[in-house]
Image (cartoon, rainbow over all chains, first blue to last red):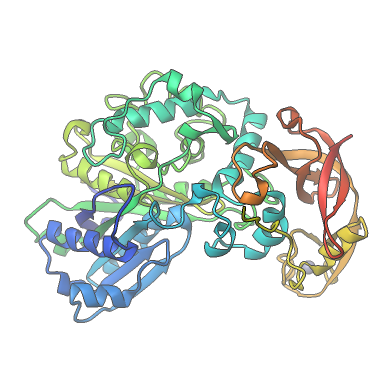
Length: 391
Length: 136
Ligand SMILES: [Zn+2]
């Protein structure tokens, strides 16, 4: 197979333990995963010459230089589009190594989002300490009315979607249950041993309508990293076959800091990014063997399937039925358990899982004959990112 | 028991001050570009249509329809602990402006998109009045 763009490849992946409760700082966790990615690739940490820090403020480029013993850092950047940052950072890394600006670029994410300030905690400092975009909007229009955290913002999108399309709410349950089923096959998954039934789902409380507790992702202590090199050099490494980055894109919705006043709240960053990414990669949706879809909420998986064009608007609940998104189905999704049932590592765990699938070492969750995979990110007020990978 | 202050709009924010002062007078004010006459909401420093930076503030109507909403069962901040369940509605006014506010009553389960709503003003203190939306 050959694709239009194959300039860069993922050569190493690293993950810490995924836990709830740790003594380690976010910085320690991120550095641990970065070092693990170097070991996985068989690359000397000191030879890394680029770092991209996706989401969060837990680490600086100086921290990487100190911990890895980097001799000559040629590139660094911070990507700040929330959950869309990991995949957006991966795309930036691909372009940096393709241009020759740097040759070994780490993309990292994670931290101690369980042991640190938790989004689900109701902590009064949440409204002050998290650097969301659109601070003026948050402070003056949203916090006074009790709209403070993502589950509330995204409920605005979900409720309008149900109203306009009459979509079947059952789709959210299918995503929740399927993801949990996949987590049972993943030894790193927080919920690997905890079964989830339809009765458990329907009896879980609404936190914000239409979201039940079991529609909402985990909060996790942990970090993940990937190492990106240009494909030519990647092929010289011996430890693993490279996983090629066929293409990718990021996209931003209209009025990206304000969900309420964009023309249609159903239009998202990925609405713009997905057609670009498929075009750049020269791949059609029919060729995709699996997808790791950013799943901070069950409903956002459904919406991304629609906006990427895997099904029409409002039809995702139908699309996910009958095992289509399960292992063995037409389009297995979140084969590691996702943010819902494995861990919330800002979607870098989705990238790592895609690499395992394309190396053929995804264990019990291996998608048979996986050749092409899609990974997405979703963050802040609808920013999107998508990467198309192949082996 | 520690009490937490209610999160309120920031009267030191110059961009929002006309809106905040408008609420005090029971008016809904939005930006109108002095160059291209486009309405802008929420307020910003520049007009995206013509990139100029001079605005007037004009009054918009106080009735509209629910564009979307949220029904909150778990408080995201301790001040709201005693308020749950509460509703947040985004009301679309005739000119396309969508304005947030709390749903006026406790029957939050009845909120629907398309419901006709009318602005109500809740006096909080000498500086701050907040917006509630009441079913017409
Ligand atoms: Zn203008």
